Image (cartoon, rainbow, N blue to C red; front, side, top):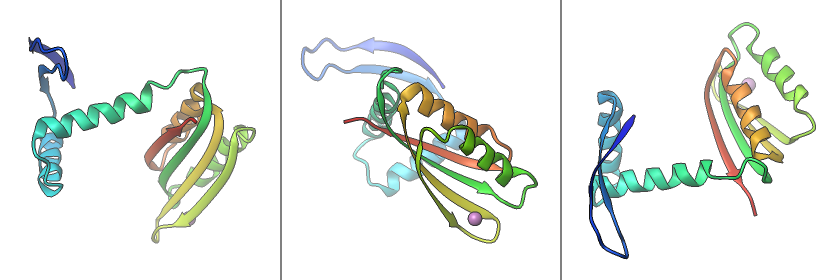
Length: 145
Ligand code: NI
């Protein structure tokens, strides 16, 4: 998604900037449907909220320690997936405080890990899990007091 600056409106407070972005058609369609369902007042507000969430999630300082909640969904019927996930978690055993496993349906498992580490390490753990074959979705939430 490329972001291009177009105009600047010069107001002191609530200063806004107009941007134009290029986005995948299918993704945009899904986004539009979602904000219609959520009855957003405008698409700009929805995009602003999404950007704010993104900034809040990733602006965490790399050296700051805190907690992370990593949620993964994976297909346990794919050969080697469960073993690789367990292996990865054992290699980060110093940082993983808790692990909950739910069998979602016949094929899919959901796991929630609570980890405590520097944010760089938390990102590393989430990325490692995401990279494994059979892992369909990874969601990382970081919290720091
Ligand atoms: Ni399971």
